[in-house]
Length: 517
Image (tube, rainbow, N blue to C red; front, side, top):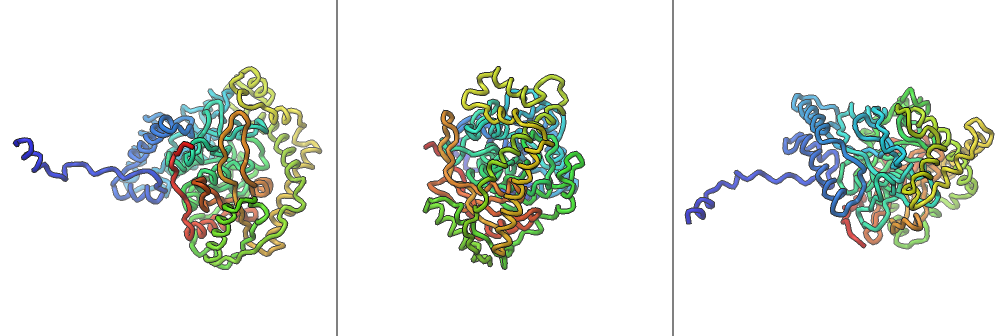
């Protein structure tokens, strides 16, 4: 009786209020939590780290995150940022916002940059890539590195996306037996699973847009040359770029605004400062009004369910003020593009990888592509699931100044740019092109490798170096499908604005269920 009476008068207010959930929160929601005082930078980072421990390291065990930074390092950074906020200094919209980086991007600190390979498992360079330095200056909190298709999926033509010898196999959070696509597999799965609100991916051809679409988030491949590639493990200086992966188009625009800009060490970015703008300010729900949108109908595949999603998306864009223009035979005169692209990638892989490996501070370790090939042969665990046929092909190529490479590069650029995207835009008098990013996620098969389930629209913008955005447009049997928006060179702000306007009238992003099939 005494105990009961005591309980009866215990003030309910003495119980601490429950913490707001972290799942599905975008940058704006997190900033609102910090500005209100309900949460601070340290608590937000800890909640994400706890979620990684619960769902990535255990439970469904997504293996989307290769490693997180030590808690002491994160605590020191978030304490400093919280003190700045309390003093009235807010560095910008990313102040205190956690972010994950694909593990081919160098960061100063104790974590190595591995590209998923055991050959680089001790590659602690002590260097921040320029885009990482920009993120730190903007107040973003780098909490870890994401898994990837090893060597950004350029080692073999029979690989399984999302697998690396260092990180294991990334699972798709929407269906655990399904693939997360690649090569930015971990970045896509991690953002979808709310291990961080933002991640950085890299793309040579489809490596941002495919995992973003298949994991049901927003992914943006910028114009090549808008974002620095310095201290990022390379494939091709003609096509490589880093880019944002996020829950919303607005967050992708915020992130692009931070990482975009010229870098003296990367000649491709010489014009970046000229073209860089306030990508968030350019966003508007009315951005599609008066725009003519070219439809890549012949690139959506034969599935009726995907065609229905695509038609619904087109109607939404039309309802937002766009004029829809059907394009016939968008793939004419493109037959040689794949062969030319492969020649470019193989030659540049050999040269660019040697330049990168030669720049590493460590005196030992691989210095050439031939060294990597030899390492893999000496380590059976690297070749257990698939070979290194593309590495071996690249090793047979000549130099960057050879006629074969010069001709292949000119041909690829012409077919994808002037005779590809530029031709389609001009001939149909349209502002942007739209298509289906990919088919639904396929079942992962380490023995037989990837089996893509639909056509992809990534090749032309990847080879041309033009911007390509994917935004969720629905799902097939719970598996996300993305809508691609492609524009001409340096039209990054316009492409993002068009995607934002579509997103506002569609709202098709779905939360993952971590279901086992």
